[in-house]
Image 1 (cartoon, rainbow, N blue to C red):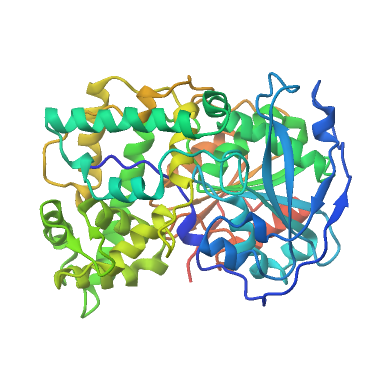
Image 2 (cartoon, rainbow, N blue to C red; image 1 turned 90 degrees about the vertical axis):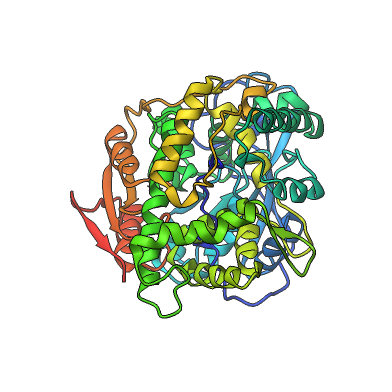
Length: 525
């Protein structure tokens, strides 16, 4: 089994692109709005810095970003922050920021993060800008997205593997070999990855040591001040909920309002979180199988009870016989299952998944590879964003490293039980991952946030969320003394994704501070 770790929000926002035409961007304008609110000692120059807003074109790091960032009404700027907040007079780095201005009676800025860790807030905000521009939310708030340190348009970026190395890695299906030799090879590659990250990332180990959520939360407070906001209004999806509750713990008096959608359980350790996520994907697969079985063209057959075996019968042969594509690449078992996982994030991709599985019956793999490329953020030119590199770098300092092989093996076995469709049918091994060889220690660990003095937050949790299970949202709402809004559906996160009941409840909260009544539930259309 390939141990899968990831809670990104790339698929749900993929369909939310702006409909506004491309237009010449306004000339640059420099605004000095800080310092706003309290300023930590030694950080005056950062909190008071001006922001120069200009064309977003230079901030694009992928094909999708280039298209999105050319749309009307978007401005971008660079925020300077300390590399190490313990040494603010030392090296600095920059954070890429995007803004879409409020169109009406402005309340302030709504800062968002789409998750990952490693996803681009610039791309997410650009994706949502056109959708919200005519809504009450777009009228009352500037929509602001930022690429967390080391990611996307922020400089320097975490850099571990080249595009060619990433392509090669995807052909190997290493994680499926649990033999002693296979485990040794996995660990050698994991160690090599850690070494390359330190060698190829500017500032090396110092950058890796200060890339975690602890430091992103501090960057977000600098951004709040530079935007001229006395208090932060924040929208965090998926891993972005961890940024949110980390910020609330560090700066409780600086919070105006927070929506945390698709929560990570703050108390859950990495292995338990992984298995809970596997269970979520298992449920989502069963939901997909039921939907598929009602279709005459269902690739998995008319009986949902047989869907897991039907899926395994299609993808397991790829372990020994990958499917060659027209571009010369090969669809492997790992890519086929990653493609399926990508599709399970949202029902919008169930039809492509069924089509891809039907193609596989005929020895073709184009659609499944396209889904896997979407997950890995590989564009048409073969270039990858650094999302996957950043994902590992952040995870390795956000949680204690796991070196107990019994714990690893137990997690893999439990994962197979809760997500049997992903089981490759081979014995599991217990390979250490890159974090076990990481050159710097972790800077945080799971714990219940101490948020005394934080105003009530709104947590949104989806009953069949495949990546961040429903109970994680229930637990976070309790930990934050916040309100819980339940969405009955099968997708990863939901706010601003076309469900009027959810969107209205969230907007009422952000605009007026009105929380939904206790026990409030919304259903899909």
